[in-house]
Image (cartoon, rainbow over all chains, first blue to last red; front, side, top):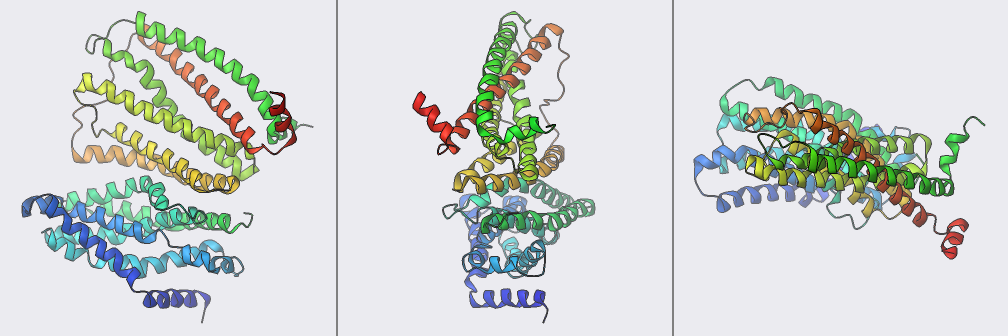
Length: 224
Length: 246
């Protein structure tokens, strides 16, 4: 079995052993979405207008909370140190870890957004746009929040610092996704914006793992 | 021999002594420029026919806004120097620039809000420039917060360097996306970009003040860099000698 397959299998086993970690962000998302009508008004017109944007922001927050300790357990039990001795580039292993995280943690989160959408009476075509933007944009979000997690790895009292540090970098992604949602509500063409969003994800997925691996080396104490 | 000018930057003591002299020069120059520019701008420049006297905050607002953006670029240059030449002084510079940069960004946001009230009737609008300035403030805060959270100074410096480099690549994307976002949501009701043409008696003092604030920033950054160098080198012989003499 190749190293890559073994790594993914290990991630799968770890996640199956601790399913709570997968369900917590979903729980968070649904709770935030339930708070909105309580805080605002049970008026379905109003909710459907702001619902998709609200779900996007809530999903972003859930994803951030989820990614915050991405490398923590691997760091404390020494797995990250072992990565340095493998005959693979560290950035590649980081990329695998991020892919596994996206598959086992982010994808389930995206899959329950339709429920949140129904709760806020978001129209069906906007809901589709929402799903597509999330699938396209979350790889970039996962990469950046992974970087935040890696940078704050060494400090025990960092708290949600990784999230705070990375949040400003999400601005272009949020703006593009909001653009898609607005166009979907008008019924106009969303493809150009989705292409830009996809480009952002592709660039992030190729470049950010290198920065993440530099941050990990830094925290392990090896000279880079 | 030919590289001496470069290698001496690696010596904290050399920098500490030189920077003291540079600081003196910068301080005097900044004081002269700022007094000239501000007096001229605040007292002698003509009144604006639309905004009256309230436009005079431009002599503070524009220079600090320029600096807020320029300092992030300067910080990125320091990060590159840190990674390429492993020069510890670059890390010291990054640390002091981050704090100064945040201060100037906050000052430009506050002075902008104060200016906005009489001119537009509101402290804040989600205009593209204001928004990207706000994001810039968050980016500076991130760099400061990251350094504060990591105890080992070398490690903190490198982590901040990675963050600054990722940030500087993103900064143009953020800027353009915010501009595009603004045109997408609503046509801007208030435009900052269309300035009325200024007569020379207004822009010359502005130019003097911009120069003055740049030199003043250099003065402040050199001062805080010297303090950081002293703190980091507190165990070395020359710092002990310096402190015991004082």
